[in-house]
Image 1 (cartoon, one colour):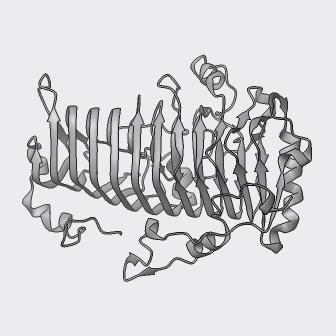
Image 2: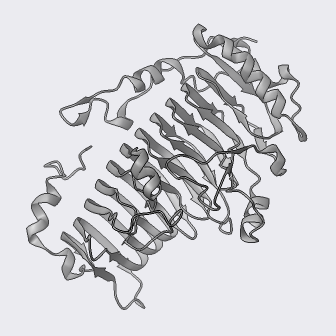
Image 3: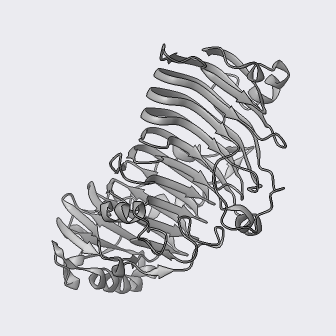
Length: 461
């Protein structure tokens, strides 16, 4: 079946990904502004439907083998411009399966890929080397529903089709401590490059929805992600030990964090040494029931730096923006610029805590102190906020160069202390309510605002 006979993907595959992979930096700034690179659209020259491989979209028939066979067949087109796997309307039940390079997975409107609720349909695999074990339980982990390992030029897109993890049973197992392995995710790319995810709705992930780890050149845009408030520790997007990432024009509402940036766990990623860097996030709506709309850490031992975030709408969340770490992590969180944020009904607007998170085992080095510095928050308005900021650093490694500018928060009148600060220093300008004295150190101002362009807009680091 040719691409002319079915609806093509937003036609975003080949030329866009080639341009994305060839983007370069000039004099410290992206030649394309990261997210400012507008894709040149093209289509895959070959396409097949999952129906051709015996799949049945009744929501009951298991289609794992159909997906596996279809993708194995499409591997043969890798040197011929790649291929598309078309998923028509229907409810397509499946267990774990792998993608391949030079592939577009296209979900038509009304197409729903359903994750099986039978754990035997999800493979068991070794944990990631930068974590050393499962996050939730020691040992191996459940494999994600849709996987990419050491791939290049991969697209998951559609006409607002849906990937539904049917995660409620996983949440129940997690709460009741009935699991033997760490929960799976919906989509995970490992050691891959030139990845695009767009125009898809993600629902009810067992844990994370999208997890790029050890990846480069990833573009995520125009997706919707949802899990209900009671879904235990569900997360929208987790960027993990990856670089050159753009997330834009997304709506994410989760049980725990909406977007989290990580880079490995204690001694495992200190040894592995892969940071998260060069990330641009813009024009996103984020909601977090029990966590943070935008979070950094607490697993950050490989380092997180060079992050630009702008044009956020954060609402109905426990915490708006949070930086998390603890002794034993090592690593750093630095050179972060967050600007043009609107918050509504958020318990704590900003948080940076140095005693957050557990350790994988007793082999971590308690003297491996994390560094948190050069964090700029600017041009932010908040209404119905309970607490402005909670900045609790580490005595042996205080948080420094916390820079606040042009921030106006409407605080709940019942709140007594709008700010809490210890082992932290920084500078503030035009901030209401007035921050704690530790954040009014004029000597820090030069290091703060050297991170900004003269017009006050955040620069890409």
